[in-house]
Image (cartoon, rainbow, N blue to C red; front, side):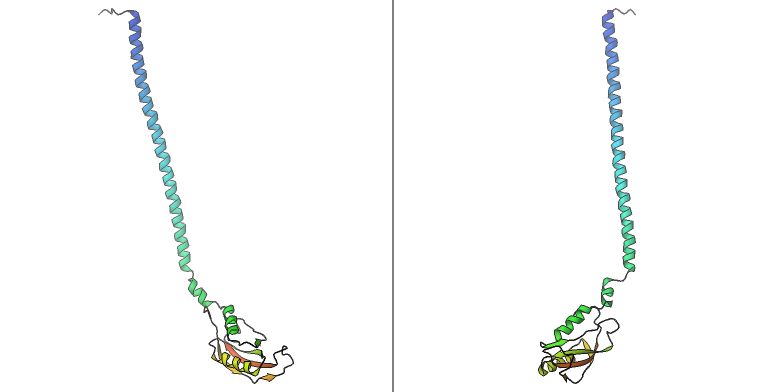
Length: 179
């Protein structure tokens, strides 16, 4: 077979075939590069997801260990029921003392609660002394109340409070209770 095509046309046809092959190669290479980019993105997202899952599992494990430790500890209610609220005892005593009566000393400690002690009060009048006696005997804060005879004009009495009253009481331990 004789090729009767001019040389210029032959060159053009060869160039056209080469261009088609290059275009096909470019398309295949573009698809391959796109596939690789998608593979990298998918792998990156998968690894990020796995990292989040690992972090959540770690936090869950830590939380579980904290929950186990917290369950092993006594509850707050049992802790609060064991504490002695001295401020409530002081407020309870202050609430029962009538006007015109002062307390000399209040020795509070864990050792004195529940044991007999003597409280020294000073009153401005016998009426206030009687009100104090009634209030102390009626109070649930005290047990085993004994009021000793009133002493008038004690040398250690503060000015304006000539009547000294000694009260032997046992302060009830009010653990965890508000008065």
